[in-house]
Length: 202
Image (cartoon, rainbow, N blue to C red):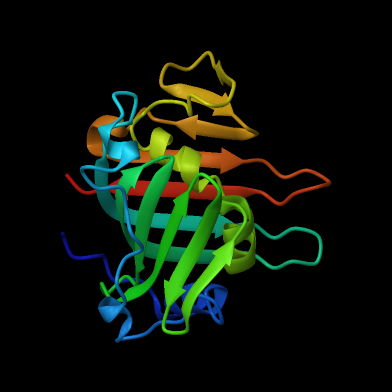
């Protein structure tokens, strides 16, 4: 995996603050085993309808814009995703490549593994809300990183080729050939604006 670009100390501190408490950085985290995934011989993997497994890695930039009395925040992480949208495992790393946490999900639950063990949540949205401060579309993001809408939700094409809208987000895949996508959620009276950038490794 390529080296991550150097970020300012301020950006680094902001990222760590957003993950404080739940996603605590820990040098011993690498020793924590991954939650079990579907393996050959299980019903999920032997089914002809089972989706193919993916392996995606790169860098993730999340900007939460100032909203009401909430200040703007920024977070930059390295990631490695393995699995598929229904059952996945997402390793989150600092810009220097140190493993911070492992996020996993399946149909009926989501979890975080860190130095304190495994913490379980009823949904992936709730997990991201508790750990990152906002409910982020992590499951749909796996589809978007492949340049396509989440097939489980309605989507709308825009007048711009390579740009579509889904679940309140505007996804721009025009730079997919350069391994980059962007997803933006506009602000409203009920929610803050969020801008996500994904830089995939070749």
